[in-house]
Amino acid sequence: MSFDRLIEKIVEKQNPTVAGLDPKLAYIPEYIKEESFKKYGKTLEGAADAILTYNKGLIDELYDIVPAVKPQCAYYEMYGWYGVRALAETIKYAKSKGMFVITDGKRNDIGTTMEAYAIAHLGETDIDGEKEEAFGGDALTVNGYLGSDGINPLLTICEEKDKGIFVLVKTSNPSSGELQNLEFRGDETVYLHMGRMCEDWGKKVVGKYGYSGVGAVVGATYPEMLTELRGELPKTFFLVPGYGAQGGGANDCKGAFDQNGIGAIVNSSRGIMCAWQKIEGLDEKDYAKAARQEAIRMRDDLKSVIGEMKLK
Amino acid sequence: MSFDRLIEKIVEKQNPTVAGLDPKLAYIPEYIKEESFKKYGKTLEGAADAILTYNKGLIDELYDIVPAVKPQCAYYEMYGWYGVRALAETIKYAKSKGMFVITDGKRNDIGTTMEAYAIAHLGETDIDGEKEEAFGGDALTVNGYLGSDGINPLLTICEEKDKGIFVLVKTSNPSSGELQNLEFRGDETVYLHMGRMCEDWGKKVVGKYGYSGVGAVVGATYPEMLTELRGELPKTFFLVPGYGAQGGGANDCKGAFDQNGIGAIVNSSRGIMCAWQKIEGLDEKDYAKAARQEAIRMRDDLKSVIGEMKLK
View 1 (cartoon, chains in turn blue, brown):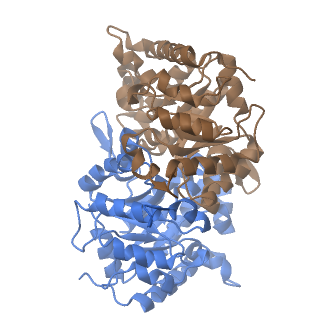
View 2 (cartoon, rainbow over the protein chains, first blue to last red):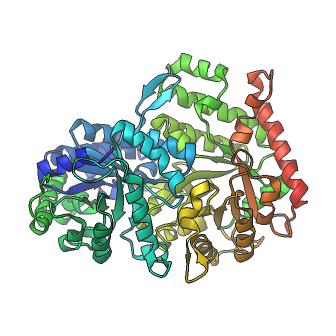
View 3 (cartoon, chains in turn orange, purple):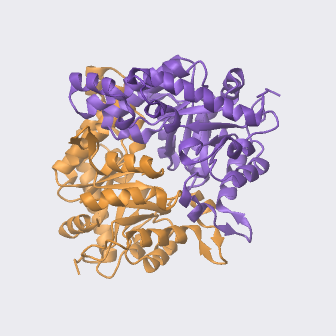
């Protein structure tokens, strides 16, 4: 259980970014939607079909330069079980292209229920002796509000299957401080406390490059806290949202990385997915090429700040 | 936006309980599994088919005496998109029988992503002008770690569609205090702070019976905190897990109710679902009758403590 596989992919591609796949219908070119609606009508099934086509097109243009994708469950659930089927097929497709898949579900519960989520998203389901992968992601985002009872069931499966989790620590949104910034015992914040729990949950299994399989979500929109947390949590790998559309720049992300240029992966969703909508006169069939262009720009932007990424 | 519809069903049936539908394969009688596996093999599809049959059998025996069901998403996701299809069909079936459906997903995210979850589970999805319900529950459990940005998108849809949410406040598990019991500003705990945020989020729309559409999850396993929170949060309706299998009894739940015997709904999952496994010599085909028996016992147990439920 570690993020070794992810770190190796990042270093190989010299790219510490993950492409978020949050496929709202408004982001999908008309020609794709038309084709799907022709087959299935303007239905949940039609929308889900369009999403899958759109995602596959993006993955085809990204897999050789971007190490990971992060599908956000909400945008699939919005299209019912058809959408969830498109999620499963997107994960399968991305993995077939060698990408590391972070399923962004922010799941949370306790005991056997959390175990069910862990099996669903990272493990294998036992059906009276026969085993099948339900979704098969490489990592899952989770919410630690329920404490160790909500995290321990994940660790067992992460160890067995060499998977990882990212726990929400300091999120990128404006109101994240309402709870996360509360200070107790005089000076420790809720987010730092949560971060320390991550460090503790992960301490048993630390990978080759110094990071455990228990990562933390820390937003680029709070760069000082990002730097603070990097210092406090040396074994915790970061998933950093907030770059691009949410306002964070490369310099805001810098504090997430260690002296080898590793320790974090920065997400961009709309920035990459919707790049095609910002280029005037672009043929919408080139939507994925525009995504590739933006992914390269983002990679170079981050690299200019963090330098070369090295496996120690 | 309120829990008026739920409260009316509770009072009509004189039963403040919700039956959790957490259908692990181990809980399902052999004859149901055999039939499904004969059709689809020991596959995710076969398991999902068995779950749906099992759930429908339970609902048929419960709908006239129990006001609500609470399917737990994890146990459906464990069987992949087939399982999620069984979830959608379970919700539809329970609603067709007049039950109030609480989708237990503990979803959480920010902005448009949280809006997508709200649309998925409580609203209607817009597919280029055509509208469809993706899942169609009446209420959704959510996690408030991200603050108002993660709750506000739900409120809009709850108001439009007369739906509700339950925010995790003080959960029933042993480790819930690791984060939730932290004290800041000298004496206020994280759980009380979260509870006060619920009271605040709900204050705009309070229903006929004094409760808003923003409820709180508070475990029966911490009866003193349950009583404390009832006093502090007069407009917040409670979803109370922890009765039965987790160790809570009727007396532990008492503090959740107001002087009219309303203000809360108590969940039992395994207690009801697995009742058939505890009766020696029972024909497994009577699994749903055993569930009914246990639901009646639980109803009478709670009623003996809280008395008659009245709409003021």
